[in-house]
Amino acid sequence: MNIYTANQYIKDTFGEKLYKLSLNAGTTCPNRDGTAGIGGCIFCSSLGSGDFSPKADMDIDRQIEQAKQLVASKFKGKHYIAYFQSFTNTYGDIDRLRDIYRKAAMRSDIAVISIATRPDCLGNQVIDMLRDIQRIKPVWVELGLQTIHEETAKFINRGYPISVYDEAVKKLRNLGVHVIVHMILGLPGETQRDMIETAEYIGKSGAQGIKLQLLHVLKGTNLAELYQNGECSVLSLEDYTECVVSCLKVLPPDMVIHRLTGDGPKKLLIAPLWSADKKKVMNTINAAVRQA
Image (cartoon, rainbow, N blue to C red; front, side):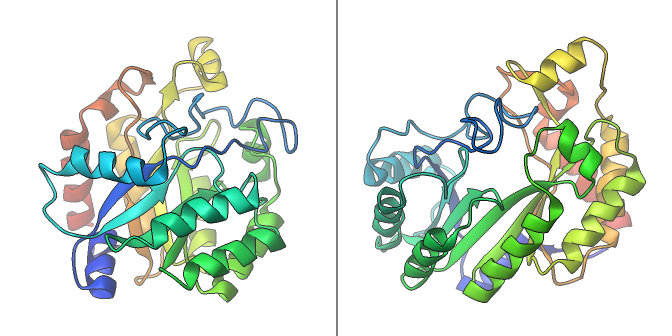
């Protein structure tokens, strides 16, 4: 099976390889402060999926330079993706966020501004801000959907219905940004058929890219308590690989596959422990994709 990888999409679009720099805009999440919920999604760590990001109190130019130094030994290119991953990066003081993203976008070494957020945090002011940034550099927006199944969404404390996601994709596509959707495989109670249905929905929703993510159990999360009490389980490498291949088969051939799995910080990882061997995991998945 041939898939359209993010690396190939980047080369086709920008004519060169780009390296992603993990940055921090200092945002929080409406699912933590009581606006949409309290405590966040059950799988989210205290750092809001930004466990590898720098401290938020650091100036954005300094963050970028520090991130470049960290990858200098393995990337010799000249241009980067400024990736704002921690928490909800369109939730907060809009003028402050606009200033951060504009500052990053104005740099000659930044080719793309990639902003991770929630579908329920894309009001008119945010859309105007994204339009402003898009005039400077291409913008990618990553939406945390995880699942289309409402029962699962309630269980993981996602905090919004599927209709909000549908509207968000329409707004972003009208804006002309590249829409990437996060999907988690192995959520409590979901079958492989449930996961395939989510992938099919994402493929037909108008999104241009997808990130497939293994459910990790991390210390300090509500999911960790459920797991340690025996109330949920995690996928084996074999089962996860099978689910990945099954989901890829139902996606449009031109959908950009930005991720086939992810790795949580080892100091926080409770399960599945096999996910810590990233090289083995990727080799296993890639071999299965080639054979499919």
